[in-house]
Length: 81
Image (tube, rainbow, N blue to C red):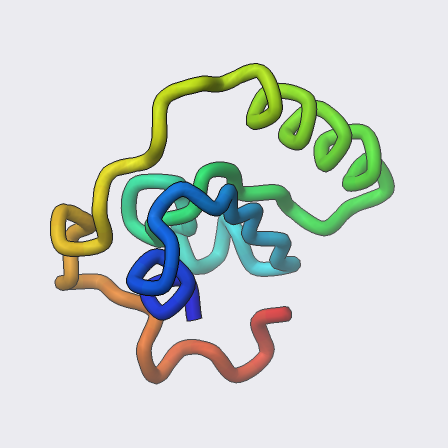
């Protein structure tokens, strides 16, 4: 889904929120997102920090083509919200 968003508009900030961040090794680099937030009791605070950081950031993310395709999330989306 992130790849499709990037193809449509590479400058749109994307925040990935998942309960499986650590288990799947999700990072900004391997997902193409601008921020990755682990679901937890503190997720609202982490989400607010991520949004604040992205609103201050002026440089756009790398294009989707530069995101490492090996290790993509395809086929692993079940159970990730």
